[in-house]
Length: 72
Image 1 (cartoon, rainbow, N blue to C red):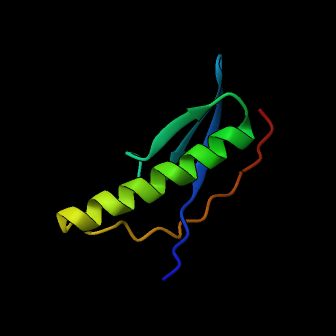
Image 2: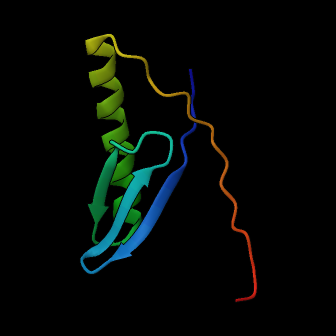
């Protein structure tokens, strides 16, 4: 089964921090956006494996984010 999760990337002093919106415990950092993306994918795979081993329910995923523009 294929699931989708929504990643949020934040620029930090050491590079980027990546976190899943639907599963905030899945969080990582990378020196650039590509590394962060790869590490977040690896962290997600490991979290799914751990949840399955513990018999925990995996979050549904599939959220949609969009930017809302406003003149301030």
